[in-house]
Length: 369
Ligand SMILES: [Fe+2]
Ligand SMILES: [Fe+2]
Image (cartoon, rainbow, N blue to C red; front, top):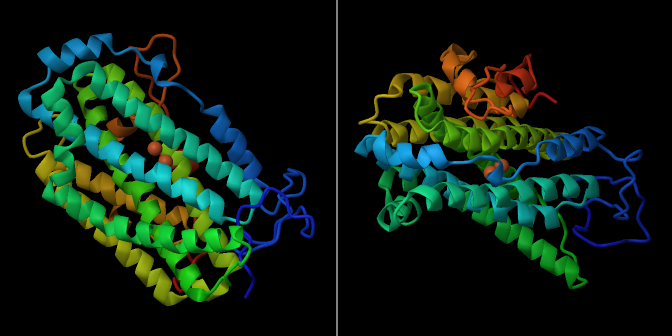
């Protein structure tokens, strides 16, 4: 087992070519012609290519519509959904900040740094979205009351302890290394990293994307189009992140074959199924008074997302009956547009479908690498 060498600005004894994503050797010099995973350079470029700021989207029309066009139930769900998305993005910011210091591959560190910057932007966007149209009471609904909604708490509590545990284990290794007494990378570290990253995948690829559909459904009903544009900017980023974290799971499996077991495969599949069930329960309650989308089609979409998430991580699809996106309007109203005419919704192939890594899993016994 190797000593962990997390973030160091420069390590003269180590090669420029990184050896592993955790506990590996790397000088810290980025030579993009000499990186272990060339796809990370592409992701680095792709992430940069999506940069935007919240001010690009003007919300003047939506401020009126929030007051005059939405029903009381729709306003309440708008507040809850916005607050719940912001909660996830707050976790995402801190998760990536710690992961950035823990990984020993500098090119991955740079990609994580970019992801982190987007999470910061997303938090700012939810602030922009709410401070422009919500009064104090409604703002409290989004940022305070949402923290105590039982089914949302139940859902988030599936992932938060796993992520917290990972952060604690990472922090111990980072600090010990920075203080000059690096600890050994052991199976406990690796297992905790695996479970933390799987939990984070549920956050990126399931809990987020699900919440966005509400905004698409309002847009389909010709309401809150500007907010939906903002949400689609965020959604495109989260889709990229979800794909990258699927790749990170595959890196983990290939670099540390002791993780690539039937037990871990079963663990991940069961975990994602639990997350799907929790998302269904929360959304059935959340959308009970909403007419712009049906709970059944939303639930189908959640299963579709779980399949995608598993495919990206090289796993079997847990919901074979939802391999394809059934509600095409989610793609129509759920894709980013950079058109000058901000009111025009441009239909595009769903990014999720177009860019997923399509795995056909042969034996069903381990992660497909
Ligand atoms: Fe985000
Ligand atoms: Fe993200």
